[in-house]
Length: 120
Ligand code: SF4
Image (tube, rainbow, N blue to C red; front, side):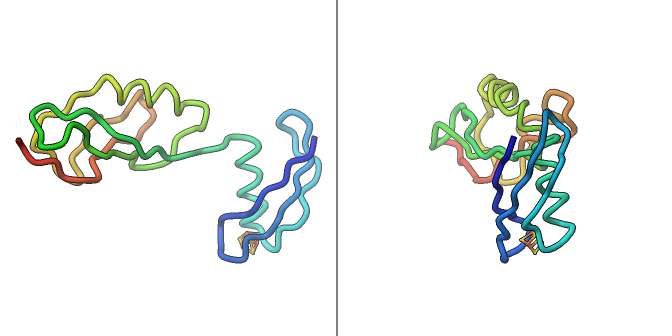
């Protein structure tokens, strides 16, 4: 199987081609440095992503507060974490940097507030 990537590890944005079978990479071409190889290897073997979304706020001047994760998580856990975030209702006021969920689903990352919501 062949997948094409644009490397996001630096502004050069190399186009990298990866041939693989299952999770076994057989060829990587187009990268100008080892960072590109590491990037596409992770994308094939264990892709990681951050999430930026919103959480409900009770008693706030806005109904939702924007939140994100403190670090990336495996891409295949995104829907689980989104479902967990939907179960949370924060109490106003909330402040940027507040922890909405500590160690979400035991993944070793927190869900934190990224924008203040004042009490109504
Ligand atoms: S492969 Fe290396 S040079 Fe090319 S975009 Fe990635 S980090 Fe930059």
